[in-house]
Image (cartoon, rainbow, N blue to C red; front, side):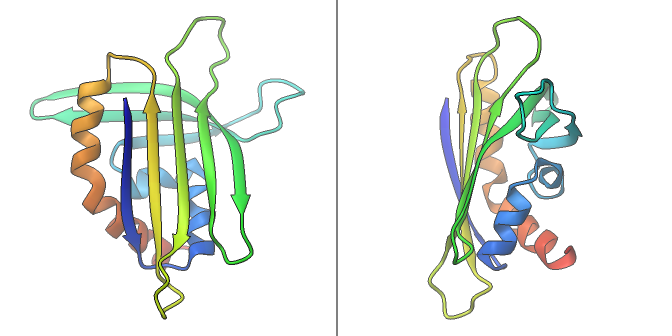
Length: 157
C-alpha cells in the first residue's frame, strides 16, 4: 500500500518541521497514531532517534492495533524552514517484518502570511494484512490532521 495525504497548516514551515520530526507529537494530531514513546538506541552504531508507536485503525465496530518500532532515518531542513523527515520500521528481533516507511514533507504555501505551510505524508506499507484498514482510516483523517496540527503548533512551543 502506498498512500499520500496533503494538508494545509496554519503555522510556519520551520515550526511544522520541528513538530513532524518528533513522533511523540503524532498522537496529538494524527488519529492513526495513538501512542508514541521514545526508546533508546539499540546498538552503538544506531545513532538515529527511535520510538515505539501504536497504530490503531477503527472501522465501524472493528478495530485493529499494531505496535512498531520506528526510527527516523532522515531529517533534512532548508534555510526557509521547509524540509522532510523519514521514518522507517526498525525492529530489534530477528524476525522478518513487513516494511513501514513514512515520509513527511513540509513546504511553504507561498502565501504572504509566513505562518502558512503544507505537509505531505506518504505512507508505504509492504504487507497485506493492514492495507484495507489503513486505506480507509487515512482517507478519513486527512481533513482533521491539518486542523489538529495547526492547533497543536499554536498551543505548544
